[in-house]
Image 1 (cartoon, rainbow, N blue to C red):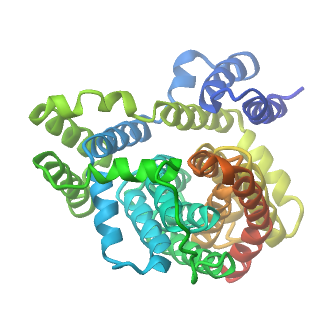
Image 2: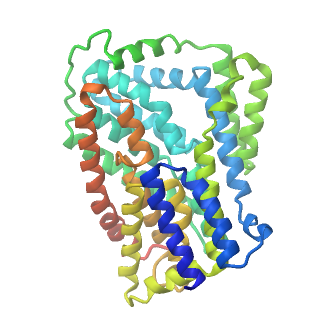
Image 3: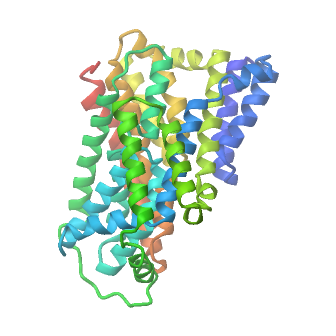
Length: 421
């Protein structure tokens, strides 16, 4: 059996084992990189570890550390509740506020699942208090993370643009950002109408209801304080330094976090424990395994197999469909680094537009994150009230399944078919 085929079977095994046994995909990917690289590819340890994404590691650790501080000192709660105050009692606008805050968090660097974890308790608490559909709230929050999810300084944006740059192709970070921004906004608007968002019911909620209790607890954390002001200043500093001075976001974020920790060690003492280490492990493991695939020639092998269909546009559609199906049942964070290299031959040969193909793959692989089997969807489900959890699960599964079919078609028509470069 060829090394290429062995590495493909190992990749399939990674997804299967992750789904069945809930083992971290990144840990499995590191093990697979070692076993496949050594036994099938004849690589040494230095060669395998050469593919470790040190720059992505710094982004993930630095940004999630900073946002762990923002969550611990109540800065995120302050931001959300002050945003909700802007709607002045118009409940139909509350889901849009949650979308906007989610988009802001991911646009300035928060990992989408981490942003969902931050917003979910607040959003579902507000839904419970005001009788807003928890399914609608879940959809709006997850789409919100994707509205801002591919900004040039976001984790997803850094991953995708980094893969494109490493492939030697002329990417378009701004097109990727605005394409995801626009399509997710459209999807959210359609969902808002279909799920009754224009007329949210105002149902009385018992004071001891889980959602209401959680909401009341958060109300005590929304007053401005010195720590919150400093954290907001730190986040703003990170955005300015990375956007305008083009400094590395990971190094800037961890420096800001350390400064905040020195100024107020008591408030931030446990923040480092809340860095999303499972996500860090997942992304770094998958990208390391992808580098082994590239070294073994597996990426070219699969790409040529897809291209051999003879119809480039059909090949492009199939790649988008694969991304949507797999991501609905696994982490899109890890999938992004593995999927885009498969389309490199199509883009390098000029058979499809680079900007359109990259954006199509990225959007198709992330817009399905609302599935209850994906990380973001599962987080929203976990934060719904017990009596509603079954109906929320069914709704998320139905919506996620619909997006698996709809998203590849939409991105193929709007981005791949026109040949956008």
